[in-house]
Length: 379
Image (cartoon, rainbow, N blue to C red):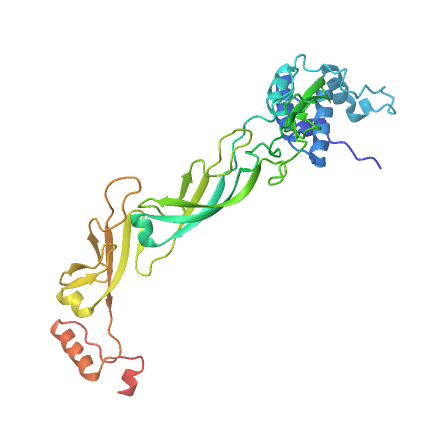
């Protein structure tokens, strides 16, 4: 049983009142998306491209569109009694003038009549990625790390030519060194030419008769290199450093790619970070919170003294100016914020409990009568 055809308006994603310009715009968008040159080896994309061409062939011609609107697909079925029409692309001339569509498509697919596109020109090398793990302090003050990177470099044996020493490559006689040839394509708008890779040289523009034994004619090899990475002060977890020109080597004289190094910062046992601020939580005793005291707290620069005033409440935050993270590629440093939490004593003796009850009574506070859930019953 033959597969039922989809509505042509549905294929192009337009409604039945669409103008010629709207049909043209819809075709341009879909043709760019599903063209075989963009989707090599994709059978589904090729089928969609043929379906799009067929729909544009019908709806782009006023006479064919009128027939389709009246009789549907049956208008072009030779067995339906309506006479059918020539399904080839060669005689189609819909939309009046569609050279602008192929001007757009030519930029992508290589359409045109001005000769083959240069496919073997200079191309930028591959960009690589790596990850470096640093400590909290190293991220704060900066450091240097050595990393190992596997990248493509020109073959030292043949100097990137791909030819055995003492030999040279032959310019491809089929594409004349351009790496591409023009191929005719049938479209809804006539026969157009597309630039495709040369089958004789594989798109390289040259033929190597005696390939280099080291790179086997590729002209490049993959090697492991040790590189030193400068980690700037103030860098944060997840940020990336770009090392220009440290990626894969360029092709046909093109520039090398970049090496993108992502920074992973190990968690600190005491400190946390928030922008350029360092956060620290530290415990103090009930007596220190009540009477005040001078305590020692750690910072990135070493231990410093911190004054705890009388009557400090749990959760109070104190600022240590200039003890935070240096600004990345800037000047100055952030601050350190110290949050104090009052520690409640546990497992008090009877004498200590009585002393606390007496202390509460002196402050005219409610005096606890028991220390546990079942203390009252036990008493």
